[in-house]
Image (cartoon, rainbow, N blue to C red; front, side):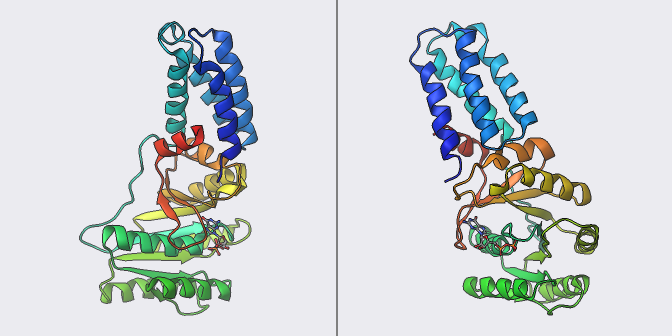
Length: 296
Ligand code: GDP
């Protein structure tokens, strides 16, 4: 699982404090030095690390903490709360219309897990919110992407609308019309992913965003890519009205730093996490649970 290294190091750093009856500022500084290094090694953005370290110190230096009962435990709680804050504090709800069709746009770079996640998400919302979903295959640059979405759809018993490799705007327009006629109440559009962000890609997704008026624009990012994931999110967020991101591959043996940087750096909430290759491996992202998991 991601964060194993981070968890081990946090535990070691914090354990040194928890046995002590009294703490000094020096104890806090030593602990925070270790925490800081382990966050940087987990590929958390340095600005985020700096701010986090300063915030924890200010709180932990407080008289009440240093001279209070069980000071080490109080410091652990501060670290836990500040980690939660980094990831957005509250769980970010998914926008679903109650009386009309909900439209979601999936964007992201190739290989991030966008197509798989489109299927996972459709299935998750179908089961949890009792929706009738349809998928639109608008990734027209790789024939394999359409086939892949169809395979995912078949496995889940979810219809996939596709028209082959024609222009994606037409597919989306026709697909949305078809979904309305068929009384689907959730449409998830899989857009093209490329290896690198380029202007024509953004241009195309912007056009699809404009015509489909999505309730959610969800960026799929690979947690394994650390700070690159943050750069990707910043670029997409400039061009589109991102409403959330989905961090995939959190099950991997990764440093996982993206989870701790992305919200703070972009303001975009993490709404879901991908935790495996199977189509049921998707979870709502809960900042406080993730913080507890990181602390072990
Ligand atoms: P796309 O190019 O962004 O559409 O990416 P795909 O959906 O084709 O996924 C790329 C690879 O990542 C596939 O092998 C997926 O099975 C895998 N994948 C996607 N999400 C996850 C995840 O949460 N965990 C793991 N371990 N693998 C994932």
